[in-house]
Length: 470
Image 1 (cartoon, helix red, strand yellow):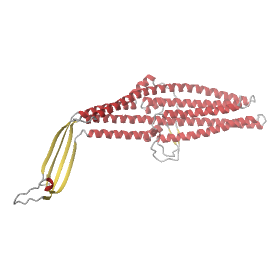
Image 2 (image 1 turned 180 degrees about the vertical axis):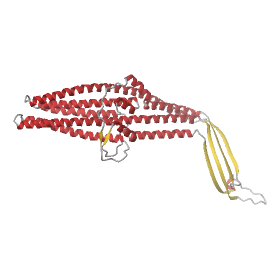
Image 3 (image 1 turned 90 degrees about the horizontal axis):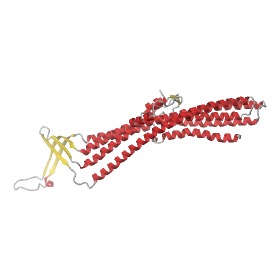
């Protein structure tokens, strides 16, 4: 057995496990818009580090996450569009008070004749009059406007549902970032324990060399292992600090605010829901699926609205007011008009609008069908990941117990002088690898539960239930 091969292969293995956490986190964020990784920080950083629980982190994210704030703005825009479409169907009433001073040249309006013996001036005025008037108009029948209003009504509903879906995305983003920090902290703590163990081995080996009972290569070997673990600890602490910054960005912590994770990494087997129940629940309560259905209905109403452009429209307008040189000399005047408008020739404009509206409707229906398949895939994939990760956790726990037993026996053999410290170094490396595998399996299991909660909809309640977070 060559020591060079052991130390050459082990860092690659550890790098692969460590990078696996980042890869899992990156894949968990796939499909999410980058705005859900940002926030609007509020407040002032305190000198005392915060004790941050998963529940606290989710609450903060739901208040400050940029993706949710943008979605809320979009919902308000859709509400304004619906109100504008509604106003086109309601009576429009306006008032006016005017004071007019006028002087006319009668010749400019064709009044240019004379009567013998009578002087007719061509300039009249200046004169003035006051006009107090109220005007009103109402659409009696316009099927196009009515269907446009129904379309905007469904669009507003879709926007409201998209806001609910955005809350689920925020919860997922926060939970993923929180779990990654938890796993990082567990790995850092594990490596610190390994550094302490390697330091003890190095000290013992150095003492034995001084006593003449251990060769110099044992000291070198134990020192190489100690430096390797110290290097890993430095890299892991740096990664932990960066992932904490990322979590702070997601939940809108004040810039520079320090915190520590208050929840231990949870683990509990999934037994609260079956896959068949999950598939039914997801289609019933996923906000994005309901939003897609509302978008289909909105597109259907738009198609009807374009067809209705061919229908006649009926409306009534009128006004009433007092007009006169002064208020005391005024007299009531009014205008009333009823009109029926209909299309004779539009040059193909309505047909082109209808073609475009039908194309949009087909696109919305295709997107709805695709989303249904995507939800089915997400639920099934989450169950597969949960089961696989649970099996990995069981194997990793057993492997860690065996690695610790091997390390204990290797120490006893080294202390008794039966062998050199290469067995101890190898056993310590096995313990380190087993710890990494267990942390990775726990993180994968919890990440899969977060994905399932998102796949079911109502992610906030789902995470509390699936992960047993109080």
